[in-house]
Image (tube, rainbow, N blue to C red):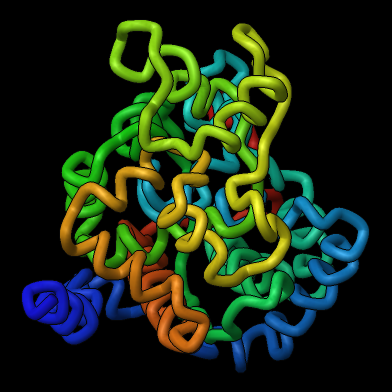
Length: 327
């Protein structure tokens, strides 16, 4: 018990030791557009709220879109770029089910009508992720802005830098460390899976070939696994299952409770129980009295993630359309 408490204290106090700010990320600021495009964050939120009301699955899509953009090649909206030859980030296998592009484009059109060539697509992604979290009853937090957009999008960046859905804690920590994010950031941001769904191929190995011997992952709750096999028979690639089977449209602690009781959908989420540090955090967050702590941690880790590989100043561009072709 004492050792677990020591780990817990370390986890909470070490505070997302992520992200020693690079000089570029240090140029981000709150309220960057206050003078050049007053009220833009309210405009973005208003547009998104109408979309969210019409499609409850969109918030999770936009949160994932921001994550995949940042991890692919930095938070510079290069995930939004297109390629006639299928060589852009969005063409990579890990991005094959990413969605929300049209929503960002619609918001961009509204923003361009109000403030032409002022607000970057990268900043719109960060705002959209924040508003998605808050709409689903998650924390309200400010986002740093001032990013500029990149104009090079490479498929191989997404394939190299996006964490695998079946990675263990060691693997996931390495992927996050490559982005200057801490182990705590990894544990906290994994809980983005408290909303949204995943396609069957993302977790079918756990059902049918966990160790390579045609077996099922013994860490899965048997009743939960039985339901999944019924919903995702071998070869099913189109069906989806909620990442959080309890409250898939609400941002809360049910994700950690699912991990703790063997009903985590992805192998990478279930793996949080295999490491002492992540185990301690998961166990703590099964207690509803720590919801505010989780919200504060998640907001801090989102800010850290939003600093990955940003372009500011004279680096990058502001374009009037987010999804232009690069070839």
